[in-house]
Length: 246
Image (cartoon, rainbow, N blue to C red; front, side, top):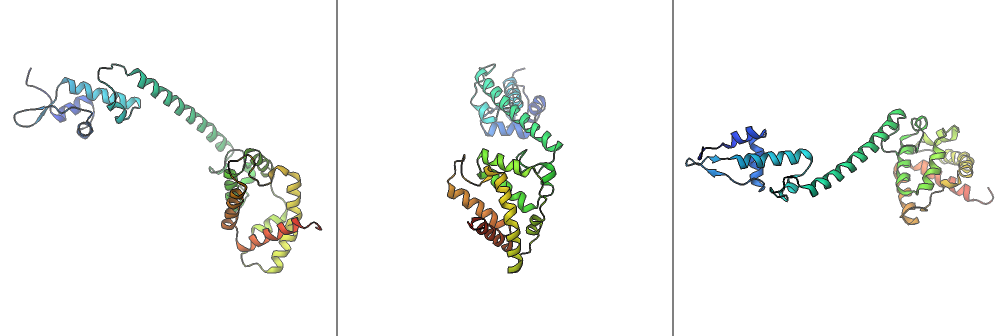
């Protein structure tokens, strides 16, 4: 039998892989080059077959080719590497199980994927303007856990005050009189919300951010999401709420 062997195509077929894979193993140093026949063709032996099957088995288990390169062929069972992989797989399974639980909640109570579960009640989020939903997303990234819980409590209730709809539909070119009227009517509504949800005040409490960073992030979001007339109404409303005589 000496002098016989398998060609590259034959060894790939025996190992249940492809010519390309065998050549790649050679290129990255995972598989030693075989002897060549007098005609120049490669001649693979049993050791090559065993090596290729070992590589395939370890990759099926989840090892990368770079990890396999660090293992010794003399290790029938690379115990330390297997234990490390087992721990990584356990962590992955746990993460996927958490993801499935969240997906289950979303499927039962559909909410936009960008919003954390439970922040806005499904029946409420479906009626919210896109700008409001996007603004809430920004808040979830910059507010502390306690503040966000206060916002979640507030957002579970549907908005019924008609002044909110007037604000949401306010055109960018709304005149002075219209903006003033909306701000005047919006101020009592906002005052009531503030009184009922004192914990929803936007601050940097419970975050790693400075107060200035939170203010700037919220300000940028407002400027991008709302039109000039709406922004003017918000400024007017804020002034009305700050007026000690109001």
